[in-house]
Length: 151
Image 1 (cartoon, rainbow, N blue to C red):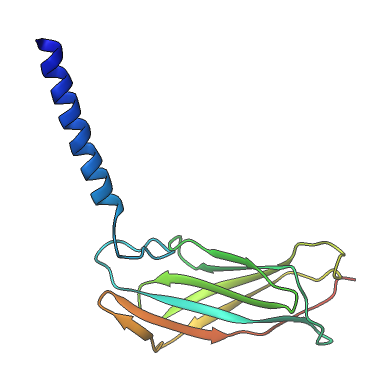
Image 2: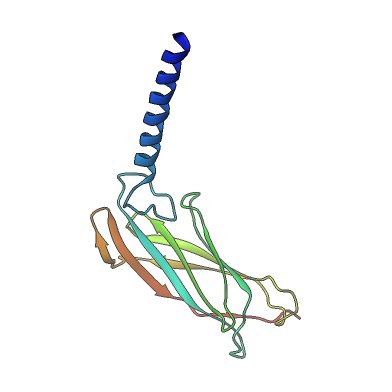
């Protein structure tokens, strides 16, 4: 009799955990890539452009890192494509920001060797488009970068 009662309780608990698990995993809200805290307004800050040599030649396989001057939010890293194009983005609180962009040649001499370069992109009085509710939208800047060849 005890075993039958325990079996029923176990089935009931398993049923509840199943329902709770599905309920917690099914959501229509998208979590931002930067992991913004719940209840905080946020926006997407995007930087895009082209990496070229000083001679104007497109440079593929350049690692581009966009990071905040603060510890948070987490940085975004991409590799420039065959034409030297890149696009990085960070979800952050919608206000003025300065972000650090790091460009580093990671393919060795395959496409030529280039010196690393760091620069800062400033978003001052950004205008956000496409937002609603807590998501304030997206703002972007174009940053075309010229890298020097290593000697």
